[in-house]
Structures are given as structure tokens and as C-alpha cells.
View (cartoon, rainbow, N blue to C red):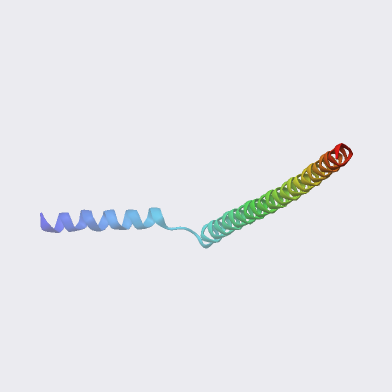
Length: 100
């Protein structure tokens, strides 16, 4: 019984080894396919990173333009308010001087 059990196990191991044997061409083809897949993934990742960097840069530039426009608008508004206040003060002073 022990001998037949050993023979069965040995036959199973040989059969398994025969199933898993690949030719050098199969191994080379698998390596080429794996390398191509890795290269494609690297290109995709690099493209996605570049796109993300471009988007971030564009968003930063857009924010800078918005801030600059907002600051310029605030400066124009402030200058207009100052001129209006100066005109009011000038008119008020003229009226006050005429009533004296």
C-alpha cells in the first residue's frame, strides 16, 4: 500500500510538472507582454500626473488673475470713493465759507 501511494504521488508530481512546463518562446512572449503592460501603465501614470500638474498650474494662475482683478477693482472703488468724498468736502467747505 505504501509503495502504491508513493507511486500515485510521484505520478501526480510528474503530471503537474508536465502541465506547467512552458517553452522558452512562451516565457519570452509572457515577458514581452508583461513589459508592454508595465510600460503602458507607466505612460498612463505619467500622462495623468502631467495633466494634474497642468490643471493645478492653470487653477493657480486663474486664482492669481482673479485676485489681481479683485484688488484692482477694490483700488478703483476706493479711489472713486475718495474723490467723491473730496468733492463733498469741497462743496461743504464752499457752502460754509459763503454763509460766514
